[in-house]
Image 1: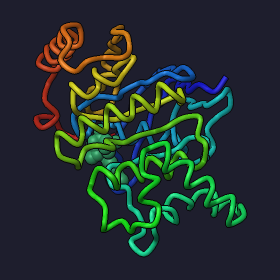
Image 2: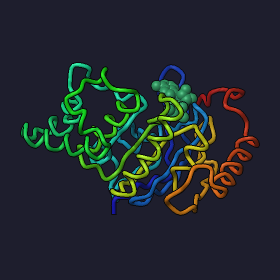
Image 3: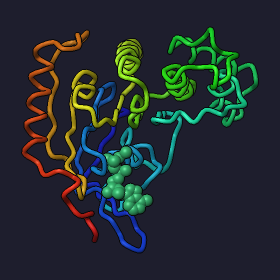
Length: 258
Ligand SMILES: Nc1ncnc2c1ncn2[C@@H]1O[C@H](COP(=O)(O)OP(=O)(O)O)[C@@H](O)[C@H]1O
Ligand SMILES: [Mg+2]
């Protein structure tokens, strides 16, 4: 079963001044589940996502995917970042075809996979456009399509809509939910926006800072499809804001030097 399981995961950034970024994180993300990691900047959200991606190894504990330790990055676990980092000299099709190309697939198979992925995010008409010709929201969709071209079972998303304007962000959230409801990848979505986390997630994992720890996990039992601003979602948002209010601010704490 392709699920994520973290057992007592800790992480220390080595360096002249070692910093403990994560401590004793236990988390099970079920196949097909949409989980949001929520916390202020510096809580270790990106570190945790990088461990799930296989870009970083835990310095303590075990991180598993589909019952096996995560050894390194794998296209089955697609990554989407705030900056989609598209190559400006490549068309959208060529950018999205990158994964299949790196795996040595034929030119025709690469183009077919990229066109299919662009279609899944509504960008098929822009296949031959260059990144600079697109809006920020379209570039972000292209970043998602690039991950989808590898037919991932899981999507690991690090503040993917953090740099777009509010209304575009709202539209992208809805599109992501539609995609997820059609395809049911497992999604782990990092955000520092309470409303975004509650609107998107089946569960919201609230992280506390220095070192990053799971403070609590809040279920969002509201059925799909959700309407922004519906009463039960607002109630959960209020509950999370009150939890945040009770916890010390990141800014007032020193780094967790070890
Ligand atoms: N390369 C690094 N070396 C040392 N400390 C780092 C490094 N990267 C991040 N950190 C520290 O680790 C903590 C967690 O970082 P990060 O996972 O990026 O948090 P978040 O994504 O929640 O903002 C922060 O305190 C940050 O300053
Ligand atoms: Mg981050």
